[in-house]
Length: 241
Image 1 (cartoon, rainbow, N blue to C red):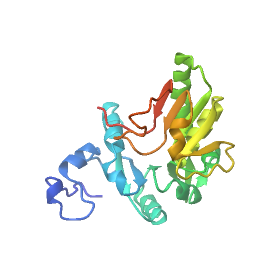
Image 2 (image 1 turned 60 degrees about the vertical axis):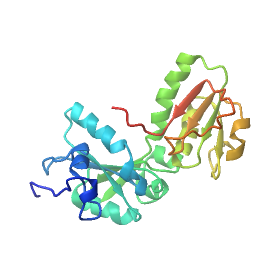
Image 3 (image 1 turned 45 degrees about the vertical axis):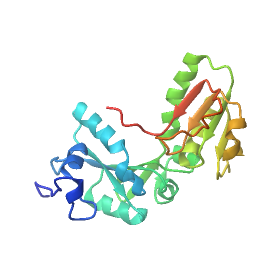
């Protein structure tokens, strides 16, 4: 309930683990009244450098939405969810490596059950509800792109084998696309999809290629091999203003 929070002047002068710098606090939408809702991004250590909080906090400010979206790295999801519930957290996004565990620790809807992963949590009275927004988040814009491009082939190749890849499979199937997954490891159980080794991804012809890995700043395709896809869909979030 304090009117103040303690931050460091810059990243190099922090005095405690997890302490925000002044620049980070402003980027995350702080300071805010204690009654304002807050949301979190749950994941591994990488969420500390994720562009997501900066992107969505800018969106909140532009649309005059009260609230803050804060990255929370954790290795113990269950304990963290209980702490967030007690603090009055309004909801959470979930990223690797916790999407499958989030499904197990929550009450999932049909989308989360189908995907076998939960990427969005809502804290209710004594329970945590979950869904998977990746399916619709892929199918809507991809469907528009297909309509505009007049796609000449109905095959999609998904790069990656995690929860986002499973959601991408379901989105492609909903759009009537024959789907192939290229990954080092992947569980196709219940999806009815072909899985090929990662090293063979360049041998597969596909009209749509979807990057469902967390890699955003390096190429996933060998520079000396032409990419013949008509549509390339990237799930990795950028930090454009």
